[in-house]
Length: 445
Image 1 (spheres, rainbow, N blue to C red):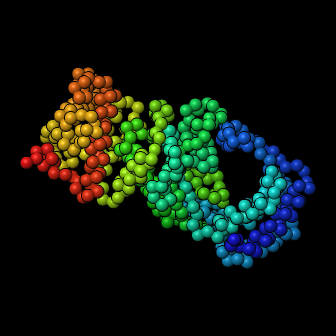
Image 2: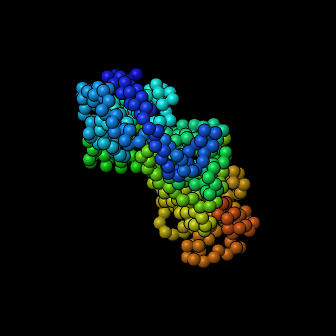
C-alpha cells in the first residue's frame, strides 16, 4: 500500500501524459552503454557493449510544463515528510544524492522500452520510490564471493540476516563488473553454465536514512559496519580453515543498497587477488559439512574466545591465501605456538609443543600414534626454523609416521594435527576449560 497516495495519483497522471507526449515526438535516442556483464534474454551472462534507448534531453525538458506536473509539485509540498527531503542530500552514511522535484519525476518515468506495459512499470517504479521516501532506514547488502563453493542445499543460515547462499543476478552482475569475481577463463566473454551459479556469504543490514548530510554520526556508522564486516569475513575464513584441508578463499566483496533508489548504481567493492591454485579449488558442503559449518560458526562467534585461540585461528586461515608451501608452514607453526605454548616462556619450546600436540590429538582420526605426532611436530618446528632463516629443509627431516614425504605432504600432515587440535581446544573452551592442565595431560598420575 502506498504511503503517499496524493503523490502516487499525481505522478500516475503525469506519467501517462508524459509518455503520450514523448511518443508523439521524435524517436528516442540510442546510447552506447559501457562494456559490462548482464544476463541476456536467452538466460546467458555475457560481457559486451550494450545499446540502450533513452529519452532525449530535448524531449525531457518540456515535461515539467505539462498541465499535470503542477499537481506533482503540490503533492510534494503539501506533505511535511516529503517537503523536508526536497533539495536535500538524502541517503545513508554510505552515500547520498540530491533529491530534487524533477528527479522524483524521472524516478517514476519509464524508459522507452518499458512503455509496453505502462501500468505495471509505473506500479513497480512508484513502489520503489514510495518506500524510499517513507523509509527511516535503508537496507544494504554486503556479498562476499566464494568461487568453488557448492552445496546441494542453499541458503545456509548462520545468523539473522547472514548466511551462505547463491548470488542473485544483481549480485553476480556487480561481482563480475567490478572484478570481484575472478573467473577461471577471464578472456571468455560468456559465462559458462558451471560459473553461472556462484556461492557467496551475504549480510543484510539497515542504516538510518540521513537527510541533509550525516556528519560525525555517519563516519561512526560506517566504521561500525566496516568492523562488523571485517569480523564476519575473518570468522568465515577461520571456519573454513578449521574444518577443511583445502578451503576455498574469499575473492572479495561488493556492497550496495538493496532496492533501486536515489542510491541505485552506487556499488562499493574490495577485490582480493587469489593464488592461481585457488581458482580451481572446489569445496562441496554436504549435509554433514553444512551442520559442521553452522556449529563451528556459532562456537567462534561466542564472546570471550581465548586470545591465544583467536591468534591460532587467524594464522591457520591465512595459509589459504599463500602461494608457497613454505609460507603455509610458517603460518601453521605460528598457529601451533599460540595453541600449545600460550602459557610458557622461551625454553624447551620445540619439545613442549610436540608433547602437547601429541597429548591433545586424537591419534585414531589422524591415522598416527601419539609418538608419530610428537615426532612430526618436533620436526616441523625445526623445519620451520630453517625456512624462516633462508635454509632448505633436509629431506630426511620430512617424515610422517616414519616415512619420508615431500614438503607439501609434510606441511599438510602438520596442518591436520593443528586443525584437529584447534577443534578440540574450542570444545574445551566452550566448557570454560582453556588452557587445559597441560602437565596433567602429558604426565598423568
